Image 1: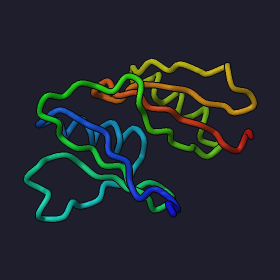
Image 2 (image 1 turned 90 degrees about the vertical axis):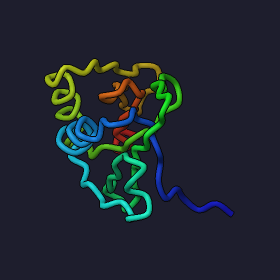
Image 3 (image 1 turned 180 degrees about the vertical axis):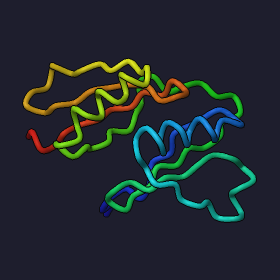
Image 4 (image 1 turned 135 degrees about the horizontal axis):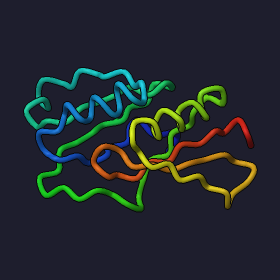
Length: 124
């Protein structure tokens, strides 16, 4: 029945598109997608992931960051350690997961406090 996921949506506060672009676009290197005209007035930002799927940042009026539920992004093995360093250098706390070897993974929070996981599936 279900074959894959088209996109994942993460909530963000209203008016914070610039911060979303800085974190997801500049820091993580995701390519921004133009939202359909009918949805632009809602705010938020959409990004393309490397495999053709999408990440949608959608405005939630009474925003509260998601501290448990989270997307997991697979990072190319060659970029994995570099991304951890880049996030830490930008001031984001990085928490490594040592509980599930041999998978290498770490967690951080985005510019709005939403939990994000990053995994190097190459290590499985």
